[in-house]
Amino acid sequence: MIDLRIRVEPLPIVDPLIVRLRNDADDLGPNDAVLIGTDGARREYDFQGFSLTLHTKDDVALDNDVIMVLPGQTSARRLIRADSQHNTFLITEQCDQLCLMCSQPPKKNHVDLFAELETAASLAPANAYIGLSGGEPLLHKDKLFDMLLWLSKARPDLIFHILSNAQHFDEVDIAKLQEIGVERILWGIPLYAANAQLHDAIVKKAGAYDRLLQSFAILFEAGAAIELRTVVMQQNYWELPALAGFVGTTLSFVERWAIMQLENIGFGRMNWDLSFKDTSLDFGNVARAINIASAGDVPVQLYNFPLCSVPAHYRHLAAASISDWKNRQEPFCIDCSARQRCGGFFEWYDHRKGFRGLGPI
Ligand code: SF4
Image 1 (cartoon, rainbow, N blue to C red):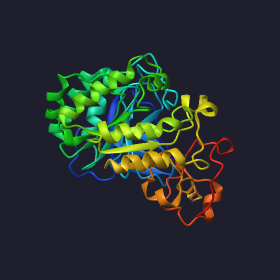
Image 2 (cartoon, rainbow, N blue to C red; image 1 turned 180 degrees about the vertical axis):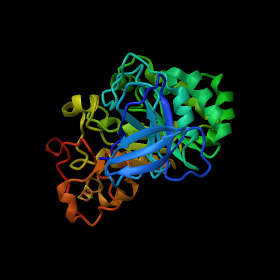
Image 3 (tube, rainbow, N blue to C red; image 1 turned 60 degrees about the vertical axis):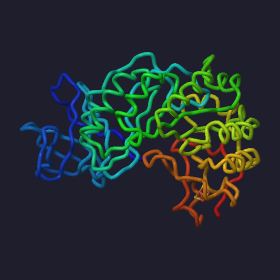
């Protein structure tokens, strides 16, 4: 697994510090630190005349990475890995839903790092693609929109993917979304059933489904781009064809519909036995859902499905969706001809409780 933290020798700081690590001293900005020496795992940088010392493996490339050092902490967060398109900022750990499959169970407190994240994004490589997630980022909608608006002017090349439960969009947001630039954001929004009772039960919030439909109407009016996301579980498996019909008729404006497998972490792990649907043994309703949505001209993709868990006819829809830093393969993958194309598994996937119908192809 790629390490998203780097050991750092403590700094006498009182506020979080955003630093871009540079191997050369050309065009230095106020947040740039320049590499002045390495000694095994130890790398020393000059940051505005002060020494910044990191410890990491020899083979880890850090040039143009952006890190955040927090006061009193001996590990820095690697916010931007310059050679990756899988950089995600955690906006908040607060959320107003308690979804059965949540990979990042909510916490009560919010640590406001908008100013730091804004700076970090402004230092990203050209045309970077940055994910924003939570918790629910729109619980801090005004600050989030202010950050995106500022970045849309300072860094119009950046593109964002924002995961949101879409419980907090209002009519008045339309103008702000358009000012930020609807082409700059893909909203990843979950819908688990075309059935208010079932959707609300899965997200554990009464009224969530109706509020979600209001938000879809607002986003449609704004011209926003939506990636609709549905995690397949035992709870909604039988509803998938009905959901596909609803998507094809009512939500056909979405950019794509991502049908997703469960991630074995957080509430997803806690509820695994009751929720995991082994689609390597029974793909029937996923196939029906794909066929129905495709007939309605809705592009479908499969996320988090190992390639060999998908019938050959649908394999072209399986994206390598698991971020590079948390992706791995199983020992049996070594003999597989599809290794390079396959999205593999989450780092924390437990094959003893996982897919029973896998094998090299
Ligand atoms: S055997 Fe491994 S690499 Fe091959 S398709 Fe299955 S999960 Fe992917």
